[in-house]
Image (cartoon, rainbow, N blue to C red; front, top):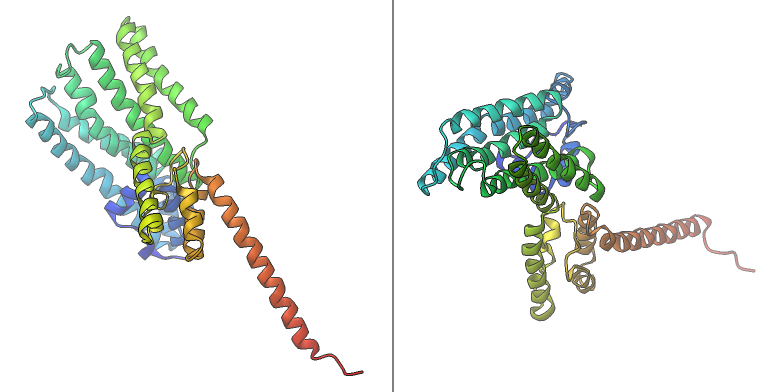
Length: 328
């Protein structure tokens, strides 16, 4: 199967990679790409075998990495400078180097990994490196500078780990893997600056990176906002009678590690009139690490109903073939 028209546009591709990587995994599979998280060489090999979808996917990801990323970094740098924050020179060079680093990762590890890491790291370098070195947050080896640098490092690491893992595997990372990733990431700056004698600065970077990684990987700020949205859309359907289940955040975000409040009640309420829509939401729940338990009962109930319907249809077909019973 080769369906290049199913490859999202550049902006949609980036959005899905960041927030809906599980959906993107299956969409790319549906387009005919065998290895959505594969290296550039693997995808080029698929293209050589006749996969136009793989070629289009590579081109759009490369455009994001090599064109959009430096452009957005330039705009961000101008904006930060316009706010009056002092920055060390060379941030445009850092943007180019991040794209080169992303290209190297795309060639050796995975195209999606290289694109996302290169793009996010390029933005983070503006604040987390050049603004810190420019002493926009106090002395460059001070506590606040370490907190800002570690925060940028952790945000990039957490967002990339969750999205890249989900795209490659078709499911979100386990909580244990997220925790291990956070610990490993925090040990790196502690070791680097500690060996140089700057244990205080290294500790500030490590602690900030650890917290930021966990916050980003578990999408905690987004979860708080989505919880409010879920409560509002449930209230609108409960009290106003509006069909709002399609607006539930679970339909638009695959990587929530906490269950959404009122989602189960919302699904129960909507099941009375829109069972198929509820089944779609249940399928979305299965892709979310924190909401899978909400989806399974609905999916199992639908399978049981389908099995009963199939059995009834088979019995009716058999009775039709046997004909009416003979009169005594």
